Length: 179
Image (cartoon, rainbow, N blue to C red; front, side, top):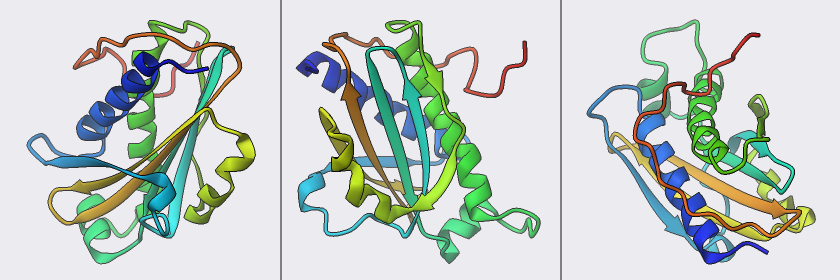
């Protein structure tokens, strides 16, 4: 069971992470709009980057949807012919997920975060197989014309209740740590 406090906290954490980590430059805008997952005809974008945050009590799956179109390429890759949209979005999604991880670790110290991996956005058609306790969908617009989307789902293994206080700037952004 996931309480309303936990649902609202996860949503607030993700929206803050998206607005602060899916942009490349300070001052760029990122708008997130919650949409009804059941009424969404198809994911917004044919490609996806998937990350998982796991704890003993739950598993949070974050799917970032995108198209390798001109607007996305122009914003995330620019003139750098050595980079691809999926490669850059894996890095950006990792930073976004890392921020979510940092906010959750204060409540759940046993967290682990996966590395990003690429799938087709059609993978969200199979999220019901995971029997999620809660799921969200968001349309995201970055810098006015880059269309992204996100699908989140939480599978709880135990009752989940917490209230998040979002720290605007955390000391680490989800980068790889070596011990």
